[in-house]
Image (cartoon, rainbow, N blue to C red; front, side):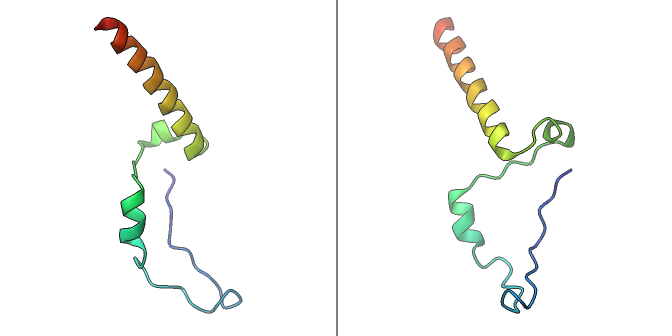
Length: 69
C-alpha cells in the first residue's frame, strides 16, 4: 500500500520541519481524498491514471443509464 508521509526538509532548505496541519483546512476544502484498497491501487501507476479510468467509467455508465430510461 502506498502511503504519504510527512516531508522533512533539511537545514539546507530552511532549517525547519514546518507546522503539521497548518494548511489542512484549506487543502481539505478543495480536495477529495479516496483511499484505494491495495489490490486496486496496484492496478494504477498514479492518480492521473485513476482519474482517467473513473472519467471513462462515468461516461460509459451515464450513456447506459440514459438509454435504459
